Length: 462
Image (cartoon, rainbow, N blue to C red; front, side):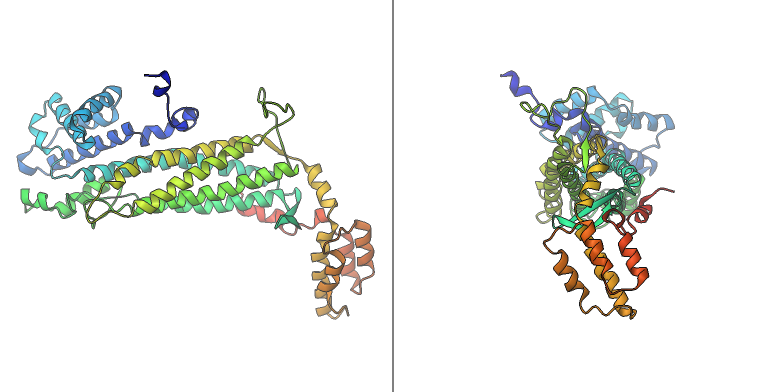
């Protein structure tokens, strides 16, 4: 075998592994198996607490030892499961056999038949996935996304008063401030992250076709529906009472669509920052030892934002695919979701990698206020909007007899560069009131930013 054949196939497991490793704690195969063991153990504990089929109630120490199978899950267990699955060719059955053997090791052999009792594999899997995805999003992805927002918030607040020529349709437009433009993205992402946090992680625990048939066959007098609800909610999940063999995955589709939406807004941020860098509005801060080009020594490439763009595109492609396919299952069950869900970590991994690059990239740029000022001073014609709007107000107030102020300013400015002196001469000759004329004569492109600075207050922390 070639030494290359043992190398990681995915860049997330190779080149970028250190940046996404935290997701492996939850969304790796090992993380999934640990969660499967947790579900199996909690079901055994629940059945013994109910005293079903003559099973005795576990002591506090026995309960602690059982739960330690989850908290102490490690390399030996991972290897053990791999050996078992090589024989069973069934991942959940391998977990069941491992739990049975661990019960024997704890002197609890009499409980062996309560392992996986009346369960279908999907009873275990859907809860295990809900636990691992919830932990990955809440403990890993969300903190990184929040950190990006806080970094961006700091830039927005710090640059709230730095005037900048806006560009609508790529053309010079009414000035704004750099801080206000960054604040727009902060506001958008915060609203979207709130929707991610609202997602309920749902689970089912109701047997082969969601009917509790095997449960009731074993004990027709026990309230198995209540037992199912208690187990699911006891894991901190939302109980879904109406399912087929599988939990319908609608919450997963909702979650992935919302995370993908966050990614698309961040992609827009990356393309804007990249463009501002190319326009000279942002300078890139050289990093010690870094190389921008293998042949052009002067270059500092905006690699962080380009890398983030690519990873956000990959993440959205995978997240959108997951959202589209997981909501469908043939009749009561098919296994298309089995392979699909194994790529949840890949999707979130590309998103996490993008977040890491965005945050680092934001820390490697600085606004060039001189470049912004030059661009503003070269585009006095953007004051045409202000002039024609003031004239219209003066006409309404009876202080001007100008017939069509918009047409007049259009003729003066559309497709033309108008300098400061020419524009002021034009304003000085307008038939408007003295106060209005003074306001317009005092106006500059850099000062024509409206309430941009004040609007940043909507993203400030108290």
